[in-house]
Amino acid sequence: MSKPHRLLARLAASVVVGVGLLWGAASTPVRADAFVDGFEDLPLMPGLANVPAASVSFDAAAGRIVVAFAEGKVRMPDVRAFYAETLPQLGWSVDQAGRWMREGEVLTVDTVVEGDGLVVRFELTPR
Image (cartoon, rainbow, N blue to C red; front, side):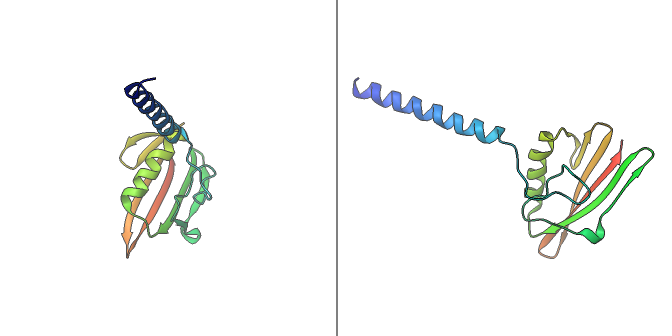
């Protein structure tokens, strides 16, 4: 094989490997070590910690209602990006910024700056 052909073959192989790595990264499910209090399937973003005393969860005639809080030294854009990537994998579709819908339920994720960190509020209500 001539030198230009070998170079072209190496370049093509590099592109195939690179695309494969990107494809694999995009389709890898987000894994969580913890979940938001009151939610059995809502991952807690790394860097956040649940605030158990502030969380409320109960079932109503119209459906379940959950309000939970987490806090940590994380950045607002990182929180938004984490949940924008994670929630669709769990069947949620975005309704508007910070608001998601799934099977008759609405999930709202709000952030408030507190000191040098954030407080994240998760609210689940019937649609």
